[in-house]
Length: 391
Image (cartoon, rainbow, N blue to C red; front, side):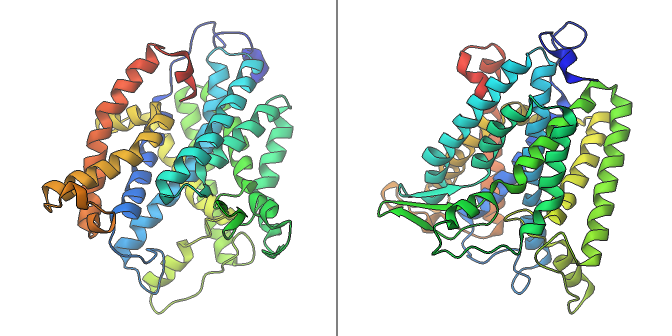
């Protein structure tokens, strides 16, 4: 279907299309795992990287590794949702305007809010997943005016070709260091002034390409369920097979080759430990492939246990904004009630604990988040406030 056929209509059949529950469910599921990873960052008393093969255990490795699926699927599904926004009745111009405004809001939130709740500092700006979502949406607001083949070419070049840039090194002393970090390399802390420091964690390449491909992927949802589920399975299995083949060759697709370790388990872990910052081609194939297979399964049958995740997935930005303070409040409540810490003596170090404690904070946080998100979802569905469509 040519997406221009939907311009100015309430969907191709002249009526408003409902939300796609499978997308909302998958998005909500990965956001729940994001919350686990953030609970680990806040509440775990240790300081080592769970992906450090010299120190980690099998359980801790996969606890951290599962969080890898969050950003790729979130960015990819954001692209698909952009297409569905137009397919449900908006014109191309309305979509472009929506993406531009939402993108600017996301970049502002990253700088003014998320950097604060992650660093507890007013002088440090971390450019992470919300920033890259925002810039990708701003770019997509321009790309949507191009033919589908041009968008596809852009996405393929960004995703499949960006590891050719791995050998390009710009020294921190160079005036181009920050610019190159914004594009492709994770940066060290860069001081723009005595009171303002920036660190790029999510460079734009290849994330903008991931969103562009997700936008084209959204066209599948114009097909009937069974057919699109079959196509998703094919794409998912092909991505997994490409990941295994590419990783086995150890020539291209990831800047860190895997090595045979002292046993098969350790060898498997190094095989799966692909570069996330920035995401290598192997990393993206490894995460998007299973995600597409899971989405196909949710298309065929959405289990009852998935309903809470559907709710989270319907208000993703609101969930992401409030889950940080909710986790901190849960930790504070736990410190006061379980540890007997006086309110005046609450400190982050005093509220940390072991892995069991991390899971307790995570589960309690999700329980608190559910009614909060349900309230907001009701307000958003009723369009109580016009600006809510951007959140």
